[in-house]
Image (cartoon, rainbow, N blue to C red):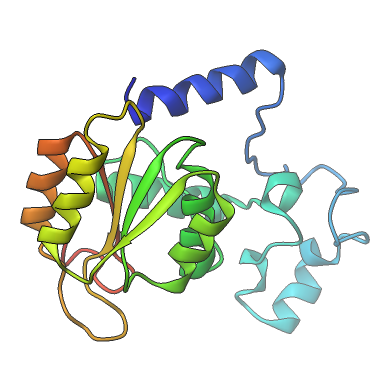
Length: 201
């Protein structure tokens, strides 16, 4: 079963169990009893404009509860269109995005092979995941291929995690070679483009 099929099955299980949650914008006509905005001050036009003209775009609490705004929805739709993706999800920071993806996407039994110079946020996410995480020497495709070969007889999903441009040294990952290796060994490639959006990858 592919990684995508495994994740789809996990979502289907949540749907069947009634535990799927989704982000939605709280209509302006509704009273918000779920966030930190107990008095509705964030939606008072006189107060928000006096404070800061950009403040109507801020969140009043967790996006999952009532903190998703129409601005979030618009930006995510534009990003999905830009990347040709089904959808997009914006996080508070790149650190939180990496931490969240690496702790949630790899499932128990999966193997993640990561470049030893990927950002700490990726490594921290992997530490929180239930997957096995193995580092390979920085940009060393021979070492990566040896690790991929060692996993090739396994039925587990294998993910390879790299940065397209490494944040500390500014060097580039050999993306073309990485894609070829991942295709050869049936692995999924995850590329952190924090320093190269719309430039590399």
